[in-house]
Image (tube, rainbow, N blue to C red; front, top):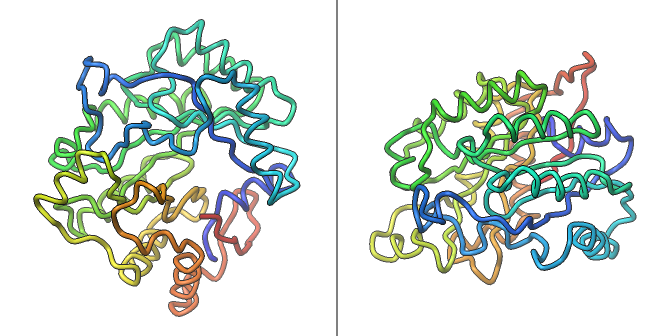
Length: 312
């Protein structure tokens, strides 16, 4: 596939395949504990989007070892990303964050520390800690931007402004810490043009990576209740695959594409059910690229032209 996938980037950097291990730091979120809200974002599951993360009752080293064991059946991978996924992973006192992040980054098989958090949970003392850790091993920060449209942000109860996001991105960039932004495609009320405006914004924002996420309706979320009471159109597979190609063509060739569809936990997924056939979705997207004949290769930072294999 003709885009700069995370898989390709990692193979360039580490000369072999690298897998993520999802971890649970046992944190909550200001959008759940009453600071900004109590129900979280409208699409967020009770697990804080961390259904694939480890058990918070286990220490970080144990979670890493458990993750390695789960992956051992399908890969002989020797290098991993420690991905703090569940809830908001800088929303805790700095001594606690220092302890769990240092435990993860000190593991000999961990090559990258990736932290999912919110731009309104990045005070100076946390940024100082992240900068310190980034000198040991690479640190990535992942933000759930989802959309640039304030009306949609209010509907999904994101509870931070675009200016807050921009400020956090600029501060991380100044510290030399890459930002990966999550964007949800198919949010209620957003047109194709609305979604492409978000893509264009991301393309010019200077972020290093992006996750393009198909909207999933999950059991137990407020979005599921809304969908039942006010059904709205969801992407059909063929349309989504066409639209993903449109999105990728608007992004800089050097931007690392971490995801192009996403996984909804099967036991929670209400719709769209076609998204569970991930291989079929990825193959269809690849075919769309071939049919269009676009991006005959991509320009990597080293100036060489390569073809990149899709990773998600």
